[in-house]
Image (cartoon, rainbow over all chains, first blue to last red; front, side, top):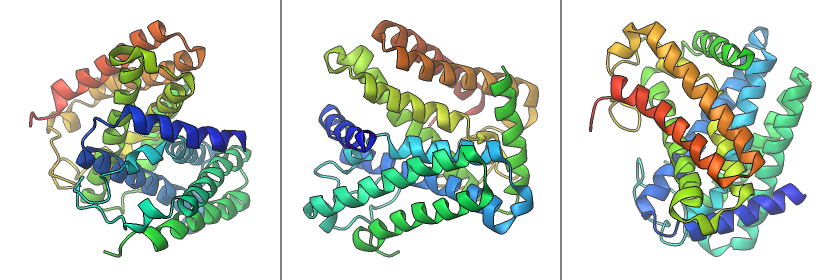
Length: 153
Length: 153
């Protein structure tokens, strides 16, 4: 739990340090972070679900480390005030509610953080079944936030 | 060195597994990875150069871990054949030479990988001067590739 609170604290600090960055730049960075996690989610999915014969522990660990590191990087700073509208790589799909329901968002963010860090731990153990189960929990934590706070395309 | 060779091996394997992904999707993922590293380079720079009073070891470690994890994620797979032209978030700026000068690219990629992993180690030690010096080496390794293989905007 200590690690989770630290992640939240880091997010707050970084928000302060990066107040000068343009809103569109912050939106671009957050779109980048989520997209890069998506690639790594796909890679793990391929190795434990779609093509289990291709399972390679080192690759899964590398992907899980990316997801955990991005989750731990203080993503909250990329949702600074003023980033509710704007265009990064593309117009943001974030809903206004994300900036209003801070307690709920914090709970979802902490769950995502926890599941992502757990995936990195499970990946090292190298059991495809356990990785598959934990990948599902990470995906669920992504979905919980997307359903509430991201507009459909 | 073992870690570097592993990273290269992972890149090759992933290239095989992801041959089915569309070229534009691979371009989008690589643009995302580099942009997200850029954000984290900026954050470290702010804390050891521009605003040293804001130095926070935990934040620097978190950013360095992102850069190392992305460097170790098999980025080579995102430069698969067919990705020399195309549009991810935006049209790719990669030059044809990157796909032809494979030995040189491998050398530069290994240097970047080494410097990024070293930054993660130095960050944990928490000496701002050493972090600043190592950040410079990472930036140099980025520049070495960009100057040769990325078209100017």
